[in-house]
Image 1 (spheres, rainbow, N blue to C red):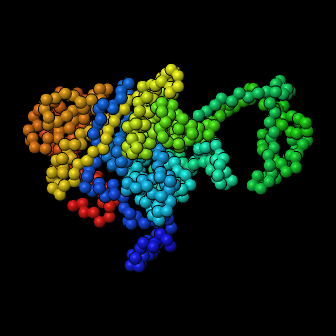
Image 2 (tube, rainbow, N blue to C red; image 1 turned 45 degrees about the vertical axis):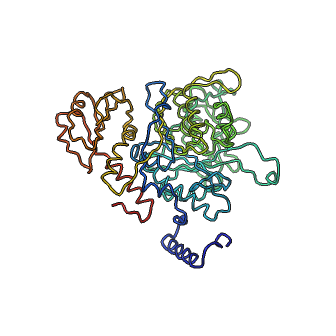
Image 3 (cartoon, rainbow, N blue to C red; image 1 turned 135 degrees about the vertical axis):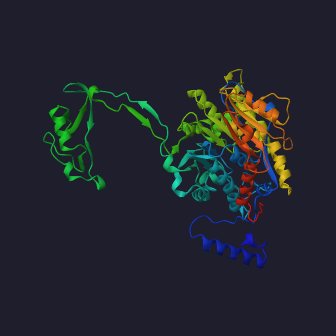
Amino acid sequence: MAKYDAFSREELIELLQKQDKELALKKYGLVWDSEKYPEQVVINCAKKLPVLKNIHEKDIKTNDDEYNIMIEGDNYHSLQVLNYTHKEKIDVIYIDPPYNTGRKDFIYNDKYVDEEDGYRHSKWLNFMEKRLELAKELLKEDGVIFISINDAEQANLKLLCDKIFGENNIIGQLTWQSTTQPTNSGSAKFGLQKQIEYILLYAKNKRLKNEFKLDYVQKIPQYPHRGKYGMCRFEIIEKSDAGSYKRDTMKFPILGHLPRKGKRWQIGIETATELVNAGKIEIVNGIVKKAVYPEDEQNLVSFIPFWSHLPADDVGTALTGKDEVNEILGKAAGFDTIKPVNLLTKLLSYFENNICVCDFFAGTGTTAHAVLNLNKRDNGHRNFILCTNNDGNIATDICYPRIKKVIEGYHKSKGKEFIEGLGGNLKYFKTNFVENLKNTTQTKINLAKECSEMICLKTGRFNELQSTNKSFKIFSNNANNQYTCIYFDCFDTDMHDFISELKKLHGQKELYIFSLTDTIDVSLFEGIADIKVEAIPYKILDLYRKIAKSHIKGINND
């Protein structure tokens, strides 16, 4: 009861009554206190609306491929933006959230959550629930999400994901051998030492995601025996006759021999007769066997399964990941447990080579490294979206430099060996904010003026066409005559210059036009081919209000 000592009698009664109500409503599932310590960043979003600013000096371009994206800022803000720009566009999400071990790995409302915090698990669930709800909206209908976790919150995370994604949409739980080095000192030496971490795998809609891309290998059979027709290999045609395998009808004589005790044949009488007549059944050391010759071989290509266990020998350990990052940066990154690039490369290899991958707990950037690695390996066109805060300068001093070096190449920390870059492009954004004023009209005006880079991210077109008119901007992708056209001057009613520029563009045009409502007079653009028109900032503001209403109880969105 120590954790309740600070509560008054009235507060304890209120808490118990609240829990009784929750339990009465929910007979099975995860119940936690979601209101005692609400997350401040969520509350603040009712007053400050997130937008993006492109930090051009950090952009990287090495080829003509599409841009990858890195967003610096709180991932709750980034996920709100992405719900506008990338709703139902993501194929795979991988995240490595804080494990909430109580040892300074989870910050909630600007404070570390320690082991003694009575609301430790509730805070973590509050934190994760809202981000996973936003993440679900990003996934395509056949998209999936991988979530790394350890014992501290594994059970809670499983129930939370059942709630958000549906318990019927779990694909499975993977285990990763994160360490091979035991602790040799102190009492831990004599205790249970943990080798594995978990990776939960959920589909948005499991019915649409029931197959993965597998690797195949060519079998090279050996023929060590001599049969009636030359060199061959012998196969046993018996199997167990115990339990569910028991089949009395599969016990008949072949060349005068019955199956051995506890066995039965695994071929029927018709097949056995055909093989005997073909001379391909022989008695070898008293056992009936089938002779297989080179001309009999079938299915010499075998698949490599997507196993649920990921051993260290195959994908590396947390120490491997640490060494990789330190080697690339040429200094100690300051983290002892980092996911190795081969772990993420392995997971992403089970999908096609043109997927979009999102990681909103990007950390040191392993997901980005894996995507670039795979693209180099198979000439693929995968792209990534990373979101990370800059706590401890992790975005600016670790994640971004790692990506830059991996793309452009780098010298190893020891010696003069140069590691060739993997290639790729990057757009670097930071989150910014527009005040949500009581004056709704002014809020719309301010948001419209600041949303052009969000729209560029939404359409994937970043190359601005030069114009002297400050009422509008036009962006292209320099590839297939597609244009993003933004008219954001909230006071200029004369669109003559804008329309004149549109008429010069030959190709698909997406128009984003300021309006105080959700409608645009499309007659303004009669005679202009291949256009699609959307009002701004209505959809953005409406989306943010819906998120706030869902995540903050009692908010007035009128």
